[in-house]
Image 1 (spheres, rainbow, N blue to C red):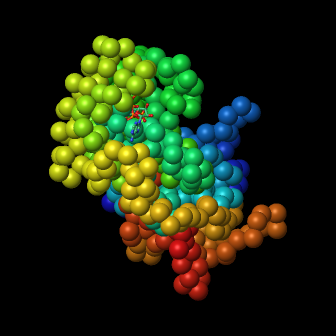
Image 2 (cartoon, rainbow, N blue to C red):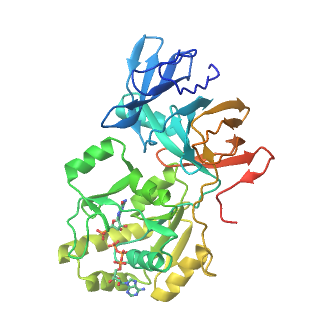
Image 3 (cartoon, rainbow, N blue to C red):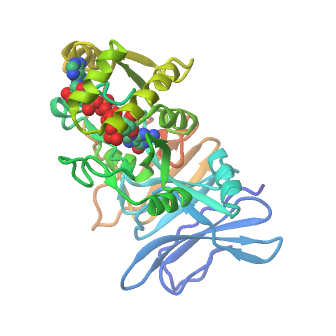
Length: 397
Ligand SMILES: Nc1ncnc2c1ncn2[C@@H]1O[C@H](COP(=O)(O)OP(=O)(O)OP(=O)(O)O)[C@@H](O)[C@H]1O
Ligand SMILES: Nc1nc2c(ncn2[C@@H]2O[C@H](COP(=O)(O)O)[C@@H](O)[C@H]2O)c(=O)[nH]1
């Protein structure tokens, strides 16, 4: 495996440095991932669109391959630099962007990408946004239908509106009277949802009570982009899939005080037909069993008295003393013109600020030795040091 060259191009008419491929409009970086493959990461601009495109040149066959691209793509900036971190991923640093949006990973050979390659039978790459420090883990809440998950989540969102965001799931079930598309669910057709699942747009999905439900990668990303902690209300099958994914979450199972009480709540909600209630109650038995599966849930809460259960939920989320989460701040700005170089598990980023751009830290170091997570979600655990060795962090202290 060759060490990756990192190119930065700001002159599309200039001469191409070693291995750089210039396009008629936009710019492109080229990274050798193995002795056979070179990945071209380019911004292709025209009057209507601006996108980051990936092409792979296979030297063994002399052919270009356009891979399936999974995950949420970065927005193209005026320029980027790129460097190979290991044989699994390429780091992309967007120019003229802030710390919230400058680090991106293009996964080319991670376990997630390998799995998708064998599923799709094509070349696959996957984007994952880099996050500085240990961003708060998403919260997965599961439990049988009617136990009170939605009620507890609503209370949490009401009391801490700036802290939590709800992952709006997709479902093929029909909307209830008071449900709004895009707020409670994204209501969709079976065929559309199946196609989106096939295209890798879902973090998890499951057939629940006769309908398809799923959490899209985008639904979770949108919440994180707002600087909020994501809450997912999903069934036990979905929780299992998330457990198996790269998304590091905290898993909470809500139990009813008794089966009779569960039935009473489901009926009193008045949203299901008798047939649907029977189906949900049958499924509840299996779900209550699966809720006890070793290693699946981190916490089990009994929702007997609502207020007591809510207080317990807040306690386990560390919220009982009115703890506040820090809002996402912009720690620094990466200028359009910058260079990067690698020393072991660290990347040195050297900025050359122009007058027009925001103030920058001219030199800083990105330590990627303890990254976690990854596509289709975020890559957490990046550490940034200033020239003086000071650590910059977005974590609440
Ligand atoms: N602790 C509680 N005591 C009594 N009623 C409750 C309690 N918690 C919730 N409820 C009521 O039970 C009904 C079902 O609650 P909710 O809709 O929140 O359940 P859910 O777990 O989100 O269900 P689903 O999985 O079907 O979406 C609602 O009418 C709600 O007001
Ligand atoms: N695996 C997933 N399960 C989900 C998702 N969104 C909701 N759900 C679960 O479905 C049932 C029924 O919900 P309802 O709104 O029809 O009453 C409930 O247990 C939810 O937790 C999802 O995205 N993935």
